[in-house]
Image (cartoon, rainbow over all chains, first blue to last red; front, side, top):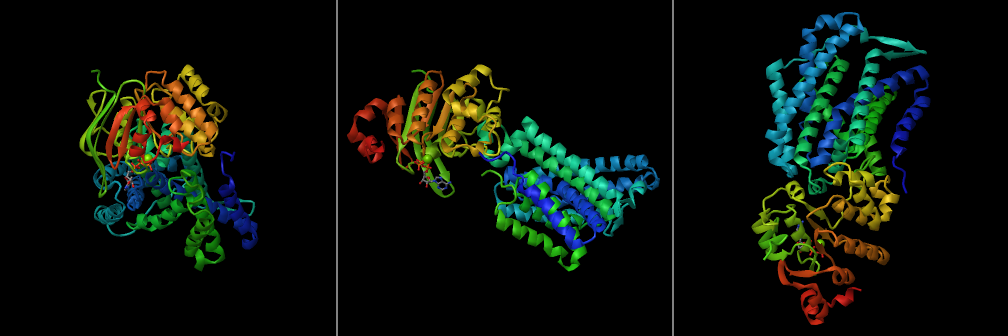
Length: 325
Length: 241
Ligand SMILES: Nc1ncnc2c1ncn2[C@@H]1O[C@H](COP(=O)(O)OP(=O)(O)OP(=O)(O)O)[C@@H](O)[C@H]1O
Ligand SMILES: [Mg+2]
């Protein structure tokens, strides 16, 4: 019998990090890059995890997922600007007291939008892939314009948390404080999702539905309800991820959702459509690789994701963790 | 006449542009085991899927215990007590045997006695309780598929080719399990190609061909009439042995 957990993809993350060390040649720089890569990976994971479940559960390819990222980021930024004072205070508690409501606003706004979007845009095109692509692409464009109408067309600066800006020195490596927060939040989200999926009946149903929705219905469960719940939860997570990403980039634009969608699709495909664990590992790989190549060969930074995807798919054509053998 | 457990009349099912079921009509009496036979491609699987609401009948009606279920969504049918074991078994490969069974037990954690009874029918499931279902052998997967359908008492079982591709020893185990199942008050409708299964378990039989029912009657009568078998199924049931 095969073991329950396939460790190879996880080992791959360690392998990539280990392989980068001699190439980077400086341990402190390597550590800085690694933390940056992990932080980036965690944020990508938050933004991507909902998309992979939505695809797995109902076979819906939602190109408009990026909308929830940008709307979340804008909602959070509005709150952060209003609470600018607390953000500029050199006290972690004050900063967090501003960031928590901002994140809550992002989650709420993205969640409500996700709920509406599922009803109005996704529901009429269940099972029709071509229409899904057209309609969700259309949704992405429309919402990008709506953001410009509501918040204006210009780039908006995001207030940075004073106590979390700058770096601290670990050994000889400079570690940006905010990146540590991103890693902590990302790990917490992943742990919560893992517990939900593996330790609760609801999670069991979601995993079963991703594999075989028809059979879940035959057992007497309404898959549509499950799907709506997952769609909304995925939108909420995208909003949270968008908030973290906005704080990381220190600025937001209406196009930000569209821009990260490319990376998110790569991560979802690398991970195996429908696999949350695969999405997590894929995001870490993409984050690490982006930072290592950004340092070693900046010209390759963009291509590195594509190369990674090609290599992974050559090795495992259905992604790191194929769902439903 | 008592109300039949299941009654189809004039059922038409289309898949895309194909008109697969063309006026299927038959009844499954309460209790006992009814066989649904027919050549490859006759429409047996389509018929079970239509009963289960996985395909929609474009005309005709499906009744379960007198209630019109033609337009009922699949989960509602399951909640009426209809359980379905699909041809491809529908096992959740990424879940453990235990998790597969827990999901099938809608009412909550499975009753201990019932679980023991199921383990009695399929001992392999106890042995691999915490194994990933995807790692089971074909026969064990089939056992899990049937076990899932009976973990709670159901009114009607729809089973599509439960012995397909199984080794003879496992087929014998499956036949024994269905023999035991027949002692409960669940009504069973089985699609099967296996001669031994059909003749040793079937009470009544319906035969399909090209999307229609071409014969109904007692299984024993069909089993005794080689000429009829030849005509309906294209070969004598013995040839399956
Ligand atoms: N999804 C589908 N799309 C198009 N045609 C289909 C589909 N499913 C079944 N058919 C066709 O419908 C007819 C009946 O198929 P069905 O699977 O119901 O037969 P069956 O009696 O179960 O056959 P078998 O003994 O091979 O399982 C066949 O001609 C088949 O090719
Ligand atoms: Mg069939």
